[in-house]
Length: 499
Image 1 (cartoon, helix red, strand yellow):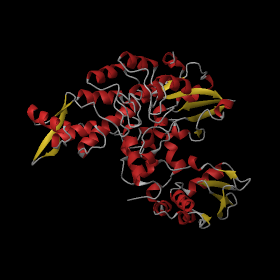
Image 2 (image 1 turned 120 degrees about the horizontal axis):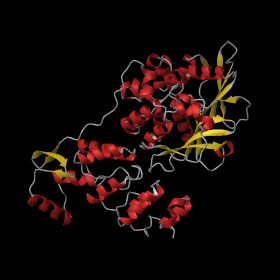
Image 3 (image 1 turned 90 degrees about the vertical axis):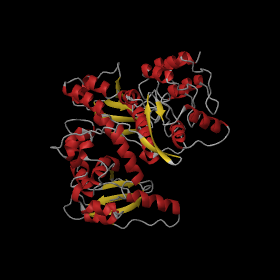
Image 4 (image 1 turned 60 degrees about the horizontal axis):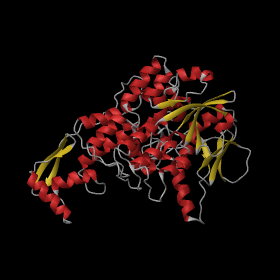
């Protein structure tokens, strides 16, 4: 089964996000702390730093029911690029009260630390231009972070999704027919004849307009709105009229640049959660959802979180035979003698190609070379755990003997991902002892120290890298120094790199 609402590639990425972005260990620890009435411990378990200078007093009742792991589950990401990490530089607004706002700051960079920060801001600071790339307003969507309201998720976004003729039409890309079936007499979509790119963009945006018309009408009526406009991409809006009149609701298309007094409904606040599509298309069992999300889908179901499969030997074609290749003690174990290995290494040094078991071992450490699918799955598992800060999961794999010399799609090693792993210094020592190189560069030409400075690494991690021999005078691929990075990013706690 397919859907025009979410591209197939994005659904695959979202499934990986659901498997790795909020580990089961985090959910269990954060839930236990929240149920015990300790919201600060719940934040610590969910990798949310709490501003030590903020006055959280006005928000104590909200914080007692704050589920930071649930918020992390629902945070925006950019799956269209294959990324599983959180969209950076956004400010999430949870509650507004008497000129103050309870907010969560998202990471500064998409490829760095996934830690969040809970703060209290003045309203003027929330709306300050340039401080954040954008606002993610959740004040009217408490079901995305408040444990009490989490069961309302489907009722507020996608009721009756399991057997909906409207959704069936939207799956087929027939949006106008779907809205007509949902009780809104929507005019035919405009045709853009002058610009092929604009036409393609509009058609793609319209096909993926992932709203239930009944939800739109319910939201408008809840707000007492008789006329509503909904933006569909950059160029057009749908204007709905007659919402409160008891008669037919009509919709017309108008350009975005028109000046209208009709109230705007933010379409993003009404979209179906991607979990709806993952479950109904059979890509993710409902039991694998966050337990508070699962309660909205099936209150009687038992949570059964994703547990990555343990690494197993992989059969590799080696000449005329098939060999079992596995990893123990951080190295590949292959059924070849030292003499055979030396011969392969000599051939490689002379410009030849390695084959079979040795080719698989080399491909593990070098992106772009062909790796058997089962080994690729094991490498992806290791690097996704690292990207999402699962220190316990990464440590468990290293204890099981996996080779730590892997690289992710961006050419980063586990050393590059240490900011994501909380700057764990014990893990740093372990990786250096295993032979990982501090001078390694990723696909963008960034060293381990560059990434630590730019991606939210702690001062303790940066000092430890310097003590281990990282070059403080290193430059990136455009010639920027670490000192210039510190000054540009205003990383005051890394000022020791400037002097």
